[in-house]
Structures are given as C-alpha cells and as structure tokens.
Amino acid sequence: MLQVGKILKSNGVDGGLLAGFRDIDIEDIDIKEPVFIYFDGLPVPFFIQSIAKKGTDKAIIFLNDVNSLEDAEELVGMGLFMDESLFEDAEDESLFPDVIGWMVEDSESEIVGVVSDFLDIPANPCLELNTKNGAVIIPLHEDFILEIDPEKRKLKMEIPSGLLNL
Image (cartoon, rainbow, N blue to C red; front, side, top):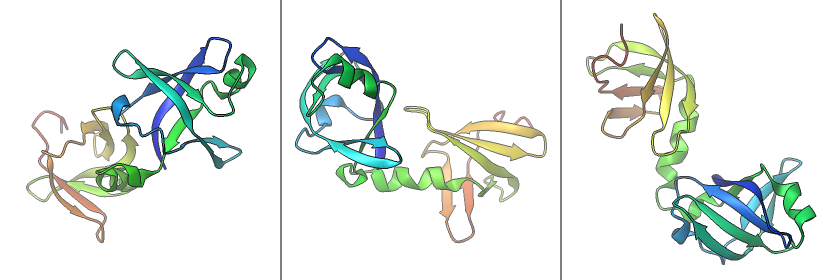
C-alpha cells in the first residue's frame, strides 16, 4: 500500500471529508479503485463516491458508507492508501524507505555514512545519514544517485560539495 493522502477534517454534515494529497495529482485518482484506511492494523477499502479538487493538493471527497458528520469525524487524521500497482513508478519509490542501514559512499568510493532514516518529504525525499561528524540530511534526488547495490546494501551518490560539511 502507498499512502497518497490524509484526511484533514470533516466538511459539512453529510459525511464530506477534506483530504490532503501528496505525490499524486488528484485528477489521476481512479474512483473505480478503492482507497484504504487502516483500522486496528488492517486496511479497510472505501470507494470514492465523488471528489472535487480544492486548491493544488486538497479535495473534498465523499466515501461510501460515510454519511454523517459523526462518521466523518471518526476518520479525521487517518491516512488514505492505495494499491501501489496503480502507480507506474511505485516500484522505484518503494525501494527507498528500505535503505535504512545502508552504507552511502561518494563518487570517490569513500564511505560517508550510514542511512539512519528516510524522510518522505513531498517532492523532496531525503536521507538522514550518520557520519563521523554527526547526523546530516541530504536530498535523495535521482541526479545524485550513481549506483544502487541491494546485495551489498550500498548506495553510491554524487553528493554536492557543502552538503556533508566534513
């Protein structure tokens, strides 16, 4: 499952929800496919009855079986998930949260640190590295990646000068 948004607040008294979306164009959401909300660790499918874009990354949505203000209020703050296979580049994106613990080396093949966290910042994912001089955050941009070696759990990157402050 890939988190595509979050329910920000209820909207109206008839079950409407204001949802914020990230890394997805609202127009690309196929309302024939369910969105999932986790309850007690299990994904529960909901079908979108209607969706109306509000701004660049928000929309008013109505879900099946959410028909009152009380129903809507129970969902506030919950994530909206969709099946990863619905997105063309989901395979590439799904690799990066799994790089925690990997070694990062620079273009000179010198180890610069170990990935301690993946920061999923919309439109700017970053890696937090533990280096000999402390924690450093670097952008995880495709232009910086030189090589990915899952067997050796190693990421080789062209890191712009000044980002590491070593």
